[in-house]
Image 1 (cartoon, rainbow, N blue to C red):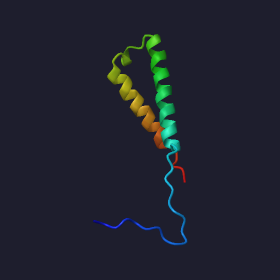
Image 2 (spheres, rainbow, N blue to C red):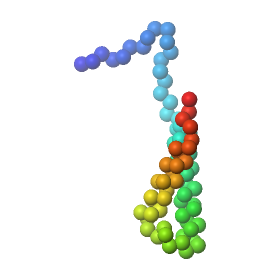
Image 3 (cartoon, one colour):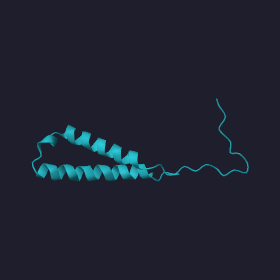
Image 4 (tube, rainbow, N blue to C red):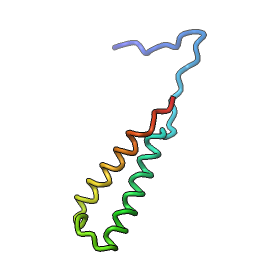
Length: 74
């Protein structure tokens, strides 16, 4: 059995932050915005997004693009 890592004297202990990063927060915003856009398009009889699969694919792509553009928190 491996020994547990011991803290080094004189150095602060590493803290785990459960706060969402900017990338996670923006991903949720991107998904919500895409959902609204799809509803508006459907209300205007745009036929390209009639299936749930197409809506999910569009949401995934837009969320990825938005998260890709947001820099990591330092």
